[in-house]
Amino acid sequence: MHKRLFIPGPVEVRPEVLEKMATPMIGHRSKDASALQRRISDNLRKVFFTKSEILLSTTSGSGLMEGAIRCGTLKKAAVFSVGAFGKRWYEMAKFNNVSADIFEYEMGKAVDPSDVEKALATGEYDLVAVTHNETSTGVMNPVEEIGEVIKKYPDVVYIVDMVSSAAGSKVEVDKCGIDICITSSQKCLGLPPGLAVCTFSEKALKRAEQVPNRGYYLDLLQLYKYIQKKDYQYPSTPSLSHMFALDYELDYILNEEGLENRFSRHKEMAEVVRNWAREHFELYSDENHLSNTVTNIKNTRNIDVSALNKALGERGFQISNGYGSLKDKTFRIAHMADCQVKDIKDLLKNIDEILEF
Ligand SMILES: *Cc1c(COP(=O)(O)O)cnc(C)c1O
Image 1 (cartoon, rainbow, N blue to C red):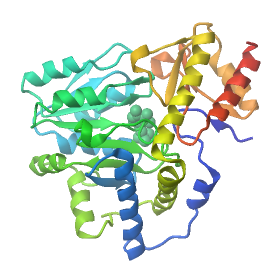
Image 2: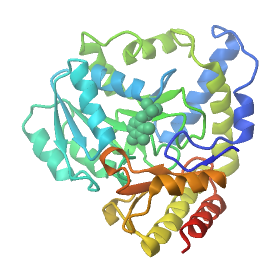
Image 3: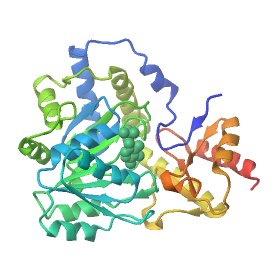
Image 4: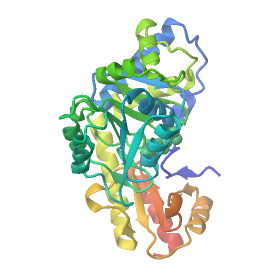
């Protein structure tokens, strides 16, 4: 039996979107490929509220994260980390020989913008990396307030991991001054995994031009230049299957559901899960910075999370255990992509029955 996924990626994909993945191939150097990729970029600009160029990559989101920290740092990167995905920024820097410092917070807490101010005042850093929605803890960082701080430092490039929130929670990239904002196909965009997307500002472009070793496949400057010259075609063969599906889904998001409705639906689903969690358990994270796309629930009743998931599996559902060291201490319910409020209620009703609430 298929288990409906309530895990923070990959998400449940609508059958119509899955069907689009099976569209017959076109040549990746054709006019049709150019038109497809240009249309996707134009529509993604609306999702991100940006005038910047959009880059697509046939990798998961981590690919563009690695490209971004490497191509964006000349002096030193300041990574502000509130969990496992924040730490990933730092490891990417380290393994790419990019000089970086990590500023870490207690699990469940958000970044304090005044710490960013203090770090930048030293003049040591020319890039700030932040996770918008920390999937491991269920925290949403104040990327707009952090952006206000960074605006006072015109030489600092601002990169944001929006992998588990883009198209599910509103962030206006240009208003926040974000230079590179990254997401993956398998989270709030509601596609299968295998494609990543980022915004790429003029400032990021100028910075990348100064960085001597940007790698090859994930050289964002190279991608940028290539699509300008070749009418939105990419240097290597992209996953056209994902492009067909993304094109279809973006049309649905923008013209059928509506972007604002989509953001509201995510908030509404989050509220339903939070209220349920407050009634039966506790929320793990700082109440002022709760995620709209994934809820991390403190396992105050010491239930066997794996056993719960097994019982849910028999009913056709799957949720997520706590991440890493939080395994069994918390469990997570994702409410992202095209999941509806009624699906969430259905899931919670089944959990209630299994746990005999
Ligand atoms: C899932 C996730 C990633 C990793 O994305 P991939 O597409 O698996 O590479 C990075 N950051 C956050 C916040 C995530 O939720």
